[in-house]
Structure formats: C-alpha cells, structure tokens
Length: 273
Length: 233
Image (cartoon, rainbow over all chains, first blue to last red):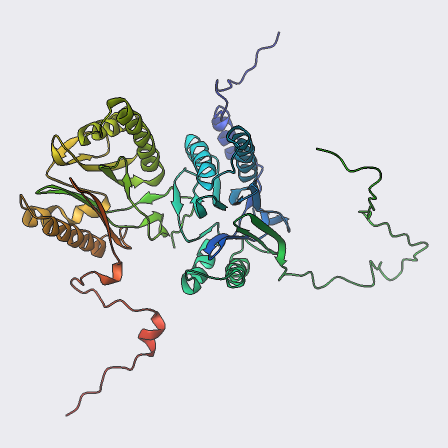
C-alpha cells in the first residue's frame, strides 16, 4: 500500500508544503503557470427603489485576455446578486458555495434570504483563509429590511456604502460616482450612472474591457441585463472570408458553422412540480 | 504611485475614548485605507457591543470586525444568562481574552467604552498584544501619536458632557489635520445613564487649523476664481 507523500490538512483548506519546492523551481528558471484573474471594474449603487450592480466582462491571464465576455455578476439568491473581482476561480467558488448555503438556509427557515446573511457567510469564509482566497466582492440585494449594498475584501473586512466600486478599475469608476452620485436616483438615472462608471473602467483600465453587464434589483423583482452595452464591437471582420496567398488555387469551399442553431419544440405535457 | 489595491484593509485611524462626569464620549475619524487608496471615506469605527457598551476599532479592518462580532455574540449570551445588562469591565475582558490569546494572528487596537450602574462611565484601552488598561481617557490608532501632548495639556477631571464632546471632536480634527491615514468625518458616541447619542461632524464643517485652506467644492472653482487684485499705488 503506497503512502501519500504530501500531508493534507485535517480540516481541508490549503497545504503550503509545495511552496518551497515551487520557489526553488522558479529560481531554476521554470515559468510558473498563471491563473485567470478578472482585472475588472465592478460597481454597485443604491437608488430610489433598490440596488443596481454593474460589471465589465474581461477576464485576463497576465497580459492576455482569456475571456472577452465573461459573467462577473453572480447569482446568490433570487433577490441578491454579487459582483466578483480578483482570482476568477475564487470568486466563482465562494459565490457558488454561499449561494448553496443560502438556499439550504431558505429551505430551513422558510423565508427569503437577507443580504446580511450572505455578507456574514462570505466574510467568515474569507477571514478564515486570511486573504489567500483572493475574492473582492460587491454584494447587493433587496430583502424584507430594504435595499443593501456591501463590499467585501479578501481579508474578510466589509463596508456598507450607498455606492461602491472594486477591482483594478475601481479608481476610474469611483471618480465617476464621486462626481455624479446623489441620493434618490431614478432607475434610468442609476443605470446610466452605473454604465458610465463601468465604461470609465473599461476605457481607462487595462485590466477591464469589452462589455457592460448590469443587474437591477428592486423589491420582489430583478432584471439581469447581460451585455447592456457593447462599446467595443469587433470592427475589422473581413466580409470576403479567408483569402489565400496569390498563387494558391482554391479547389473547393465548404463553410461549417461551429455552433448549430438548435430548434427545441415542446412535445407532450409540461413537467409537473 | 504606490497603489497596492491588494493590501489588507487597515483603518489608519484616530480613535479616542474619554470619561466625563456621568458617562463616556467615544470618538473616531472615518477613513479606511488600502495602501494609499481610501477604500471607505465614511466608515463607522465605533461599533455597538451591547446597548450600553461600544468599542472603537483600529488597525486591521478585518481583524477588528471579527473580534467585535465575536464579542457582541458572547455578550449577548452573557446578558441572557446574567439577566441584566453586561458591565463595561466584562466587555473589555472578553475583548482582551480574544486579543491576548490570538496575539500572533491579530493586528488590532481597540478602545472599549460604556456605562453601567455599578461603576458608571468607564474607558478601557486594549492595544496590540492584548493588555487591558482602565484609563480616564484613551487614544489609539496612527493619528493618536499627534494627540499625546494635546491631551496632557487639555484633559481635566469631571468635565461636563458638552466639554468632553468638544474635546473629542477637537482632538480628532487635529489628528486628521496631521495624519494622512485619518480623515473624512468625525463620529462621536455619548453613553450615559440616559442612553446613547450618536453625533456626526462632516469634515468640511470642522475648525481650520494652522495652514489649512477653506474647503472648496471642486478644483475648477479654485482655478476659475479671479486672480488676486493687482497692487494699487
């Protein structure tokens, strides 16, 4: 029976056993694999009837754009959404985990989830990992006690604010909010301001780019506006298709679209609960 | 520009707790910084533990929030078991137990202040390391360095409520003027036998100190203002 050479911490969590060996390899010249970071501009603001969250859609791996249209506004509960900046895996994992915990809690209590519950679950988890789970979050939602907006930092500290920005583009977005935010914005004014703040991040921060996602949450209703604005369309797509160098004789052309449009027709009775 | 947005949140901070004839006044600034960026310019560093005991937090934002959350929970249980409001001494001791036993991992300085029927108004300072010291007044945070001499001169026993609050506001305002890691607004909490009063003093309404300029709404106003009058002979 072979014995495992690496000690696993008894309660799960991180094992730092390989750090010394990794440092030695890097010194010898090995290039460490990079991980997907969402450079990011994420914002949130409280308006007259609820909360508006906004995010850009660029995911970067060092200097390369790994995903031009990723989703940074994560579902936590029907009335609570969370934007995530930092390491993409960490934000996805932590928001998914807390979203499941919230659902189980809803089943147990028989009530809608409250934003402060999500906040406490997230901050407990992040604090216990002492900042190694690199997730910076903007959590917003409307519950029975009203609209709430919180920011959560990787070390586990939280702030409650009327408007908030996070991520590498946070300074650009915050400058827009500080200049133009006021209390009691209407829905359209709020969306316009959020879009402006995200655009400011997209155009002035190298880690943010592509499109603007917006999520509007009000009492009993939410609207997830995916790709609300697309200020970076791909402009130079050749309409002639691919052309070969001068001497090549094209014998046959066959174009296969990579994704087929699938038509779904509902047959039979609807599923019953 | 040294802008490390991954730096842990610290509350640079100026926190003060002062006893007066009948209760205590707690005061704090409102700046939370991440490296050189102000992450929250309107934070509330005076956190409630029970109806009659509040704590001023400084140092690492995460550590101080977690400690005060745990102690609020312990005090809630303690109050139920005891059947009457918890005393300030017990609150300070619970904070001290956490701070001392986890001294290697925590980086937070706290000032506990409140009023109970046995001892009246009391202030306990709990700096890094987990010492607990009962004092007539306590100061903490990075901005407190600039206030030691000020308090040596300005503090006196048995002040009235108004005098004590004015002293606290003046002190926080002086520290904000000199400490880069403190700023924003001045928040005060007054605790006495009658209850708790929260006050708020916006940064631009504070008294101006040496070489401080009038607050302006925007840089454009300053630039567009007419230049100084030419000298007339």
